[in-house]
Length: 210
Image (cartoon, rainbow, N blue to C red; front, side, top):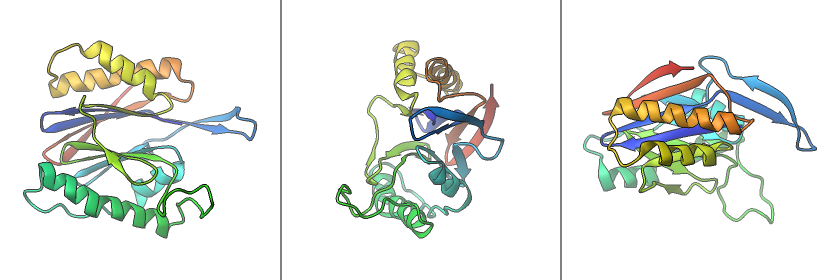
């Protein structure tokens, strides 16, 4: 399972992810806990993109090791970035997933032609998008994001801890780390080590935190 926390700032994004994978048996009980090793975490820095997923480990594997995101044309910001993300990025993720066997089978319960079973968080050029299972995307006006089993705890912590202040990059990193620690305290499927990424001007940097 997963918790990924993200904060949208002015011309930057901060993303913090946990490292715990829980294997759940057919009766719904956790049968095994795995801590992901360095380099196999839930967020991947890929050029001008940060990509992560909550849900199936298969989605994370593909985003880390197979997916090749499209090049971003110069001057792609604001509405143009939204259009580029809709027309180019999402179809490329779908193509990668389906080419490698990660898509929901055709059944009567399937509501859309294209579906997968994870929630994906993407930061591109410092702008955060969340992709749902039907490949629709959203951006939150509050600039706070959390996905995965510990998301409710993390979002609550973000709202309480932030107050009304405008966050610097350093403050956003501290806040994201505090929020994911709260999620780990109450959600048994969330665990350290935590990994923090900062994206400014399309150049992601990673700092590992405990």
